[in-house]
Every structure is written in structure tokens, then in C-alpha cells.
Image 1 (cartoon, rainbow, N blue to C red):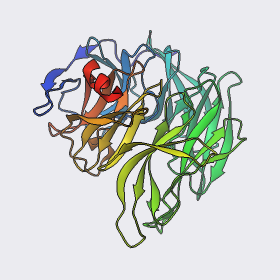
Image 2 (image 1 turned 180 degrees about the horizontal axis):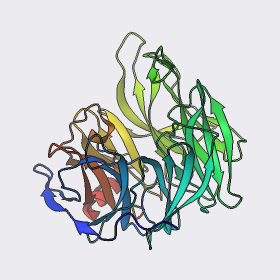
Image 3 (image 1 turned 30 degrees about the vertical axis):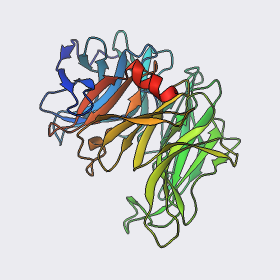
Length: 379
């Protein structure tokens, strides 16, 4: 075991109140450092909703580090000091954090969230250039991540923690940013995306082709069997925007859709839609004006989404289809990913963690959703 990266906690928090909605929030980070909030759709929280993992750079040219924020005390602690780390995932039982460290090989690392000691679980040469988005199975027995497996191929790799073996479970030329997510239910299903695009001349960086095909969503068992399509998008008048998540433990998938009436018109992200993998039916659970990244509570009742024109956060009911403005984040919604709010519910479903660069530097925030807001959405 390796020693912890840091031995002390500290605080940086500032109380904030939205000027319009009057909703209070806590700005958890405030140091003059570059932050990457790293809030993917997959859970980054301990199951008690108390702690969240996020990413941070102390300067633009310095390696990314993983940090831990305590949402009750507002304490912060640095977790890693390896050259560069990515694809973190908190084990469902909350005891440890798994992540990838990639130097001369891809290493799966484990960090104890009580002692903060670290160790390498296993290494693999099956992939390199690991993408963002690691995910843990409900029983903490497996971890999945994506990466490059060949000159123009990418793969999903499952790390079996009991056998300490890594295995490619799916591979294609469109998996360069799969964002895999294990189902929060009691099964081994993995939700992931394929991006139908092209590479630059040097074969290094994927660029989406501006057609009506865009992103495909699929679900696969973690043994590589039972590949199912999520039947959304893939037409001249409808595209999946690429920000997807499980709709809690319902077995459905939620995503934002880009749509247009005819192929000669511009696309608009005006719907949040939930669909069952392999089926044909869909439910519109939220409507525009330009929803992007969304998250759903574990019980599948509530969604929160960012609006890409304003970076405002909206909250809504999956059951009643009612929605309301939650707050203005003030994020610039610029080209770096970390200027987007990327909201996430805590496991308890009553708090939302999000990012914003309203101060000029991306910071991490948390706000609670008042009971009266949810009550109005239920009616």
C-alpha cells in the first residue's frame, strides 16, 4: 500500500444565493486554481450522499488530481498525486475509489476512502489512451472503462476484481468516447455510446460529422453478450445529443434529443426522453428550450438538466412531466468541458452538485432542492 497523497483536510467554501430564484448554494471550492469538476452521469458519490469525488488541476500545465469534497462539513482533501489520473468511480458500498493511472501501461488503482492509502489492483496492455468515464458494478465486483485498442479501434474493457483479469467486451471504430455506465439496478448491464464521426488526417482526434446520425446508445451485458440498441436518434430529423444516463433503477435510459421538423432546418435540443433498451416506445419527460446534460435520482422520480443557451439548471418530475427553473449557474458554457454545469443528484436525491466558472475559474457547487419545489412538481 502507498501512503495517502495528503494528510489533512481544508476548507474553501463560500455561501451564495441566486439573484433571481433566491435559491442558496455553497461554492465548495474557491482557491485560485484550475478546476475540472468531472461530473459524469455515473455516480461519483459515497452512498450516504456525504462525499463527492471531483477533478482538479493546480495550474493549466499541471497533471489532473482527484479530490474529495465533504458535502456536510465542506471540507476538501486531495486524494492522488500520480502524474495523471482519469475515469474515477466510487465503489457502490462507498469504501473505496477506483481509477486509472496511465504512464507506460494502464493501471487500475484502488484508494481506501477511510485510510486514503492507495494500491495498484492490476494492469493491462489491452488498451491505451483511456477515455473518461469509469463505472463500478452494483456488487463492486467489476469496473469498466473505454480506451484505444488499435490504430483506429476503441474498446470497452471490464476489469474483474475477483480474478484480477481484464477483458475486452466490445470493440468498434466508433467507441472513442463510450462513457460506460453500469446499471444502478441489480444486474450487469452497461450503457454506452458510439460516436459516428471521422478522424483527422493524422488519425488522432475524432470529429463528429454534421449529419443526422450522430451518437448511438447501446446496452450490453458485462460479459459481452446481449447487445441492445436504445432506439433513439439515427435519422435526418432526430439525433441523440450524447448526454445520457440511466433513469434511476427503472431499467430505462434518459437522454436529450436534437430534433428538427425537416432535414433542411436546424436541430434544436428540445426534449428529454426516456426509453427502454431494445424497445420502440419512448416517454418525453422534459421539454426544451435547449436541454443538454441531465441526471436522474436513483428512484427514477426526478431529473435535473442544464440548459445550454443559458447554463441554467432545471428540475422536473419523470412521472408528471412538470418542470421548473432551479437556479442560474452563471457558467460560460465555453469550449472546455468544465465550463458546463454537468449537474448530478446526490444518492439521496435532494441535493445537486454542479460546476460553474461564474467567478472566472471553474468551481464546484452544491445546492439543496426545497421540498416545496418537489411538491409543486408532483401536482
